[in-house]
Image 1: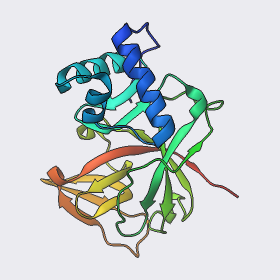
Image 2 (image 1 turned 180 degrees about the vertical axis):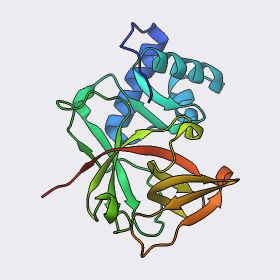
Image 3 (image 1 turned 90 degrees about the horizontal axis):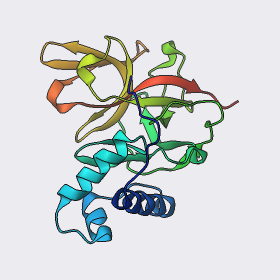
Length: 206
């Protein structure tokens, strides 16, 4: 499970980038690209931006997967709640999410950093008590090799989409298995699967 630092004081350059990120994400509802950050900070190289992002993460102000700018999330203001990033298939595969659609205001209840939420489409996980229309709370996965067999994950299969399934390793392949006998397992080469998050909780609106 990721461990995030408490907030530490920022340098002027780090604060400048953080404040710009907060304004951008607040206006656009998604994180900017490295190139956009470079232009905003008046820089010609990505190296200073990546360095500032690493320091912001180490100091507990953001969560970010290096090399994937769109995974950036702010941690400095918990009032914004947990981002609902889109929908995830619990059936076949659907197009992956790329934008924040809404936010669940769970900050008063949860103090876990970096969480995101997905709305479930389909019934392939019903035997795991996850139904169509539920919202699943996910924790980013930094190292998929450390996942326990059978963990419920949201996984991206390039060219196909994102799906919610039980995660299993099978030699050089990954088996994404439904919790509904009506659905066949999805077998894909391990190097073609991107595990985005593991299940933390299920939110059912009744």
